[in-house]
Length: 298
Length: 268
Image (cartoon, rainbow over all chains, first blue to last red; front, side):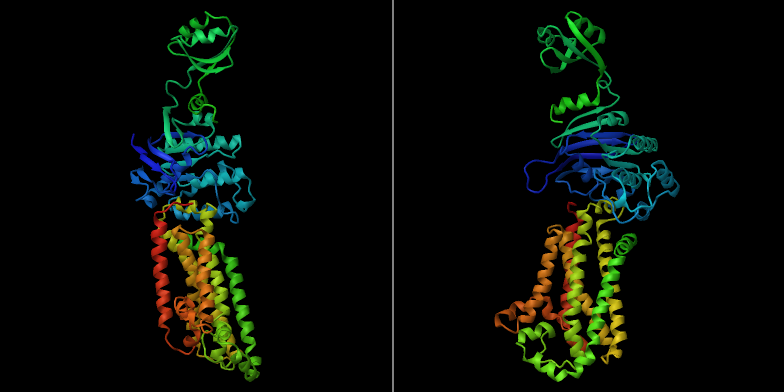
């Protein structure tokens, strides 16, 4: 499948600061792919999004959306892009309907029928001044303006922030529709369960650098992870040398998260040699992956 | 582009109404004073002409002597030299600095920038909405002046009054365009862009008007736009080459600085 969003060593330095806000980011997102962009606050997620939208000028490197350079063909490529900001800023004195009408005129190719369908799905309050709406209702209008023209590329910064669970489901449904239509989605999120649920691939960014990229349906996610508490503290010391299990995280001197390195049977056989007080099993989540890179920072 | 222009004006519709009403009422109120001022012209002329030159010029814009009974001198000193430009400069600078700056500050500019509209077109639409605002406020004020001039015995050539109003609106607007260009270029915040435009506008007014008092102000006065603003000449049907040059310069400055500054800069 062709790549809809491509960045090549995209770099951003703000003013004369030494630290790079984004350091040679190279990613590629294919048609119909939902890419989750994960990272702590200030890691560079929003900077990447703002560079793609040409709100910021890159210090070096480049980005392309649907084959158009994000700087030189910025206006052209935006007819294919739906954008939702992290903190949705709307005009407080106008109603949602007036704002959507205005943005539809700018976007030009909005299908009125689809727009109405979205308005109903999100139960958006469109006839009240936006300033009188709750954060969740403002977020709905933000989502509507991003999706109403059925874009081929969606760039979404924390899209479900402020939405109740029902509306989150409505959002996931809309996202699935866009994916089926072949839209590429770049979505930043703090909600790791959400990313694991809706994304095809995730990238973890730390201090402006992409430190890990992986498929959500890949080998690691979903693999079992054992939380084991031993009677004897020396068991953990001994297990660190075992080749059948990998120590992921240690809590105190008797409890640890362990992951099979080969097969579950071999791992259980190894553990059976020790005096176990308690054993729990669960699947590896994106959160485990994320915390492995971020340690105790978030 | 038309959609952005309409959107800007739609949001400003009540403000435009109030500014128009304010300009019209103040102008008509001043014009209504003319018959009684004319009747006491000798006394008033004596008082005004005895003022130090600098103070006199704050009101008259450089005229050596004043005869307030003369309709041209009255309109010049009471309406076109100070009252209207001062109100309109405030409007122009407030709008010029905020028409893009407020959107940027509130992050609503991103909604427009996320659409398939180039930055140049966004700038043009916003600048045109500022100009349109002045066409509405200035146009209705002009209609009021034309309507009330004969009623208050202010017999001045209507075409000269129209040209003077257009120049006054253009001159006032120029400071708004300066604030707009500085803010759009991104090197100045909304507040700083306003302060610079205020210094050029009102600072220039003081320097140009007070240059008659002190010799050392005569040279810097030539740098002040107000030095070239001569509504008395316009009302008398004389050409104002200096003012034309200044307005053309501001227009070129606005186009170049705002376009090249805004085109490739970070949105704050």
